[in-house]
Length: 222
Length: 124
Image (tube, rainbow over all chains, first blue to last red; front, side, top):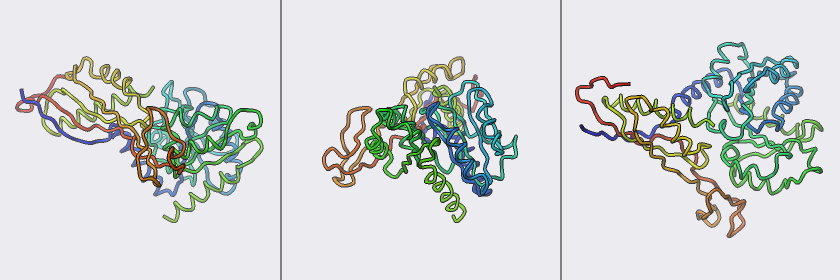
């Protein structure tokens, strides 16, 4: 029997990435800026999102997709602020896939929106691998998690255009070396942006919201 | 743990490649997994065995080519040797910020299969 060897060089996740490319086209048509928020559980994704919604919802049409293993809690928190939110329940799966985003968009009227924030399942590893058609990934790192996380989980910090260091109001109380952490992140991602914020005190939130608005405007111009 | 799902996608990609070039039974698959792909090669191999079990392709080998990321200094113009899993914050020689290249691969590179004459349908 003849053995044939074919050199193919194809993305291993071709089907998922094809779907992500379709989503990206769709978001370009609707002029929607899409953020993919990735972090450990408990780093403050939903709280930052609430703060962001509070600042931007009067001026921009926002929508949110929440990914969690169980419960509608996060989507309920966003809906309570008057912003449409859809909860994807993964029943144990550790990340969101572009096909779940497509299903969520089909099932809801989240679009048209000017800014769509996808809050991924709390996990620093698996969501890194999956393109959701977003404009950029945002990695969150809370100061209580420890300053060694970027070098322990380099993949996400190398791929996120923006890293947001959260809970900065707790810096006086925890051993977190901010400058070394910034250097670690920069070494993995020389062109990335690093922001330091506290959703509780409001420090750094202006800069974060400005970044979103500037990127929305840049997308509209392009 | 998302390697099982990735193993399923790799199998699907391989099957499509076989069908584009005839029909046959998978023998050997070569993939590239980057250090920054967030995929663990051993778990992927365990997942692969589970995915092909009880199919016509049972026994097909998955060869994983692990690709390191390269930390390069734009100032010295050199790649910096580092031990596995460790990263330089700045260039150890001149203190400049480093660049990162590669290491994000997750690609199917090569698919080998036993061709079946006349395109006879394979067992699945």
